[in-house]
Length: 81
Image 1 (tube, rainbow, N blue to C red):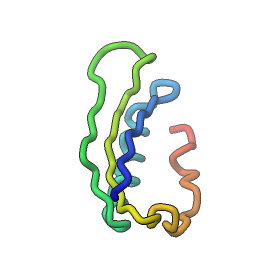
Image 2 (cartoon, one colour):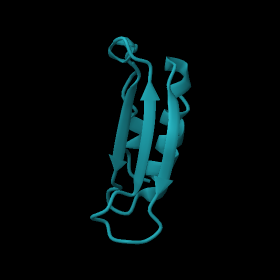
Image 3 (cartoon, rainbow, N blue to C red):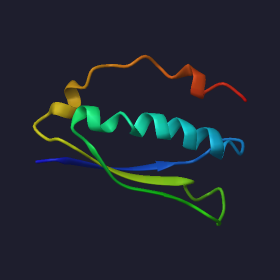
């Protein structure tokens, strides 16, 4: 049975552009693990109390998600512009 995740993301200090760029890189890796990005939407208005981006991701079941190989932390995404 597949594992379906709903990911809610908020940007910090008006860094929406950096968040989007980082997520572009991360979501490009999902197919490497047999996953699919089912939905990716961003807020176009509203307040910062609402998530900036919402993703729905489906990964294979049978525990495969728990065996994903580790990746080094993406420190470059945490740096200030």
